[in-house]
Structures are given as structure tokens and as C-alpha cells.
Image (cartoon, rainbow, N blue to C red; front, side, top):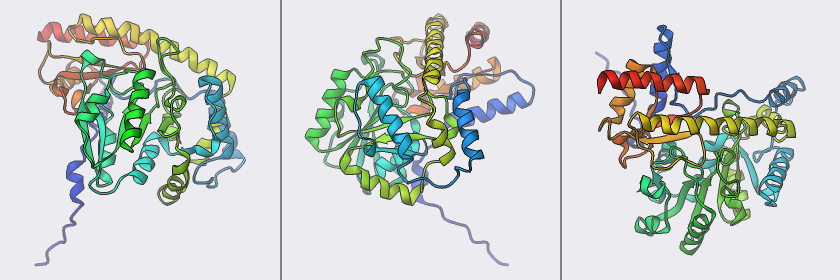
Length: 395
């Protein structure tokens, strides 16, 4: 009797965790397929469509057969448009040659980490934090080191936090502002301290700014880190503020010395970001588009201002109203010690899909859930009503 060969897969796969929110989304879609009504507060994707001007530009690019590869670093015109956007929005002059266009922000992070890490190196990152970050580090044979943050410090990292986790194998620090899942914004003075710390240690600082356009407080509070230092790797994306998630387009503002290395890796991994998306994104900075996006930003603010006290009235704890992104990271210790179980309960018994804290790290993850206010105000109100009924029946 012949024996079938069983493929042996890479051992590193055992260290890479699944993205739980995608499983929750799949379950929610299955329930909807069975006729159930589900309010989606789990996935971090704007409910607004891509602005018409961008869509039309993409259609025109297709009609004009602009479907070939671009340079690995992206369209020159798009890099120039991004540089102009930073000049007009953040009063920062950026050399377009230091901008690289990537397949989404995840592609940007993969490029940055690929040129920085060798096997056995370490990257310091926050807990809670975006779940894919640690998995990309692990995929490259390096080790993510999670630095725990708490609500009493607004989930903001300090130099002391990173210094305590420091050793000679650390090659980079990865932070986000505004952050997922907390919505916290790193003030400029703290950001300058973190940049100085990295320069003293001679390590890279990678800053995820994909929610930079979605801030809701003092406009002077949120400034790009590119305004402080030319030595950071600044990652941004067309996904969130520009409502282009499925177009898969991001960018890096890189130290000048890193551009050739990033270009070399991009050539080998991606060849280029999607050409149609790049041509479409040329119109993302049109005045009419920006006006529309600012109206949407104000709507996100209104949703946050409704959901924040509404969740607290249900027994969730949110120490401070978040200043950016479109998330509320809520403590649920008054309601449960198992946020994963609560997420399943809310999905199946209340028809509300949320993300358990386990997706964002280990630190107090069992007593936190994330709510994405990526549905309109009427749906948010309905979600609160459904959860009120659930907690009344199961309190």
C-alpha cells in the first residue's frame, strides 16, 4: 500500500496568529446569508464609497490602456502629488524621490522591515496594536517585542517603556498615530522624544500614519512625523481617509539613504503597485475630493461623539475620547472577563459584530473589545439598542 507524502510547512507558521476579525466577518456574512440582520462594527473599513472623481479616473485609465507596470517606486506624477499634499496640508516640503508607492500600507511595512531586519533581530511595538505588524516581523524571521500600554496613559508609549524593553538585538521601533485600535494620537513633543531615542540608539523608527487625515480635535495636534525628522520611515495609505481600501495603494516617505534598498526589494516582491490605482489616486488630492473627504471626517466625528457616551451607558469603560481613527477600544471588565466570548454573544444574540481584544495583543486583551464606527448614525443607534436588550436579558 502506497503512502501519501505529507507536505511539511514552515515552522514559523506556528508563530503567526490568524486575524480573528476576518473570521468574525465571515461568521457575520454567513448569518446574513441565513437572513439575519447584522450591524458591522468589526472591520476597520470606511462605509463611504471611493469618491466619484477617483473612480472615474480609474475607469479612464483602463480605457486608455494604462495597465502596464509603472516603476517599482511608483508613478512620478503621483509622488509629486503626494509631496504637494504634504506641503499644502502639513507645511512640509518633501523630496518626491524619497516617496515610494506601495501595494497598501501593509506592503509599505513589509518593504521597510525587509531592509532593516535579519534573522534574530527584534522590533519593539505597542500592545495593543495592529495585529498584522507582529506577524510580518515573524514572517521575516525576526521577533516582535510587545510593549504593554494602558488606558491611564491614553495608550501612549513613552521613551521609558521602550527603554525597559530594549536590548542590543532591537533594530526598529514601530508605532502608530492615530493608532489602531485605540485612536490615540501621539503629541508632537512625545513624538520628538521617541525620534531622539531611536537616533541615540541608532535604530529605525517606523511610524504608521494611515489615519493621519482622520483626527477630530485640535488640527495642530496631529502633525506628520515627517515634520520632525527626515530619518523616520513614515507609512501612509489611500485606504482610510481617501476611502480606497480595495484599491490597495499606500506610500512610504523614507530616509534618502534607504530609497535604493527599498526600490530593490520592491522590484523583487511587488514589481509595482497597481497601475490603475495609481492613475486613479492622482485625483485623490483634487480640491473637490478633499472637500468631500472633510465632510466625511466630520461625520466620523459625530459618530464618535455619539458612540462614546452610549457605550459607557451600557457599562463599557473608555477613559478618554479618542482623538483619531474610527475606533473605540472599550474595557468590558464590568460586563465580562472574556471579551472573545462576549464578541460571539453579541454577534449571535444581538446581531452586532465587534472585534475582541485578542486581535490586538496580549495585554488585558480578554477585557477589551474594539468598536469601529464605520456605520451611519442610525445604525450605531440601532446597535446600541440591540446591545441594551442583550445586556438586559443576560445581565
